[in-house]
Image 1 (tube, helix red, strand yellow):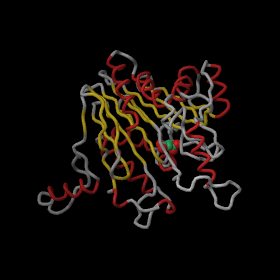
Image 2 (cartoon, helix red, strand yellow):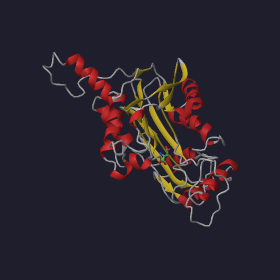
Image 3 (cartoon, protein in one colour):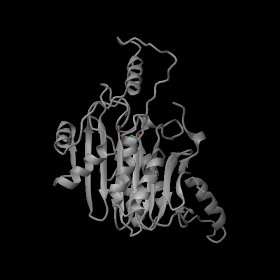
Length: 347
Ligand code: ASP
């Protein structure tokens, strides 16, 4: 069962009002949350196939980071997933530019790649940067060159479906421009989408990875939160891991994944840690991105796993989901949230 923060506070207030003489101890109690026997793998809901692959590999003894990267590779290589890798929606110039990062808890290492073109598996490029260089982050053409030197194959990542979506977006960009609108009935997506995956094995080792084609139609060269260590994902082997999907610009400003792990370190459950992160996001949001009711105009989802097997997904708005796999098998679960769906402002 999940609660919004306010429902939780309301129920806590009702239950404790007498004992506390009317004062509500802020977050004195914990929402119930979820807990699994180890190992456990969680991901954004598009990782429903990947969490099973990763879990099977971890049970077979594979390293947690290798296992979750194999999990996200499924989406990266799936031409029908328009939010990641091959088939990802392109930038404003029609070029697919990918971001990814990963962290390996037991060895305390990290790798990251931004604005990578022509290589479908940026998660593996991020890991190669981690494994083979003294650096953490490479970007753009030089990241591409590095990947080719490491043996990665180049390919055109723009599928026909994504190219058609880009053309429709371009045609509708500005009614006064020189592009003719060929399709009045088609709604143009302004999508976000990404895959984040985190795992803990039976020995309590933790890893995390996030990979994305970023915000659709972004300004060329834009780097989102996914390759930013501490924003798109973060892991600390002594605590757990967290990651995010959704509007990267909102997450970067609060270093959301790092903040979540730090909140867990201070004793919060994964769910309470993530609710705190989303509250910080809202507090840091500029006015133009808030509706008249003060609620955000964007979506942002977080996922967190504690090394003891507790885990959670939290979204700005009711309706979010995430994927999990433990010995009970893979399933999609409902995320906790800060605001009811009815509070979402109309654009
Ligand atoms: N977080 C990604 C980014 O901002 C996009 C997404 O998850 O939808 O690049």
